[in-house]
Image (cartoon, rainbow, N blue to C red; front, side):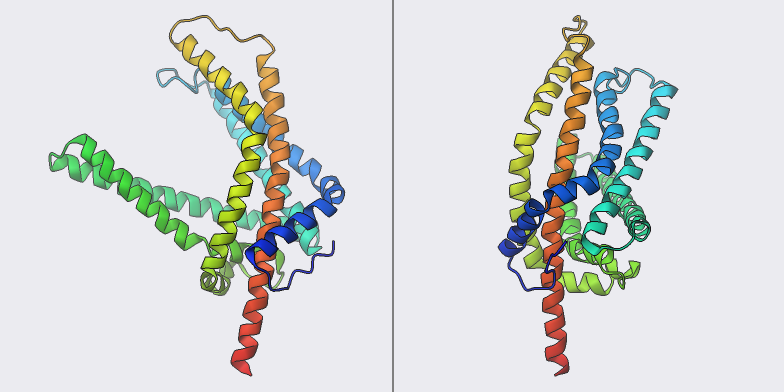
Length: 294
């Protein structure tokens, strides 16, 4: 597809270009991505359906059956593999490289993101435990300890957001540019992204608003069904008989599958926005280097 990537654009220009690219090539995008999205959505829908329907996963006092754990683990691995395939297929649309090359980069990226997410979670958990234990040992009320822990967690979340935002540029560059290396995600490309932090933030902010508005409408049927399921589950936990029909979980699964399938195309559009943001920043950086060497 013709994308005219390397061109200086404003955040609104990136959003507009992403919409034009998505809307004018929707048929091609659908033909190339539908199977990978389906492979990703099927296990995801099963996991959501199972987590909402299983009492063992919703009651702390009930042991979780081994079969349930094995099934959830299998679906998680399946969904993760589908996600990697989906990322590779979308990147192949943009960079025209082989599927194998894109699969390798998508796999490496997912592994890096999992490690980063694990690191952030460990840091937050350690700080939370340290703050609560310190306050309790000082005989401060549990309410004050919880409040302080919450404030510190919000501050840490904000700090991680500020630090990781430039990765929206370096990650896209790693996926699109064959010359980009893994180290560039937190190296040279990260520093370039940091110089354009404000541009990335406003692009993310506006895109996020549009994304959330569309997602709210998209997830409305799913939310209604989930609310009905949760209400019924709470009733059964209190001893009331279940009031949902026998085919309810088929409806829940179908709605979840369809919602996650359509949602993937919203994700594709948003990734196109940052694809053009990458192109704009890369153009600015090249012009900057030329001016410095002139």
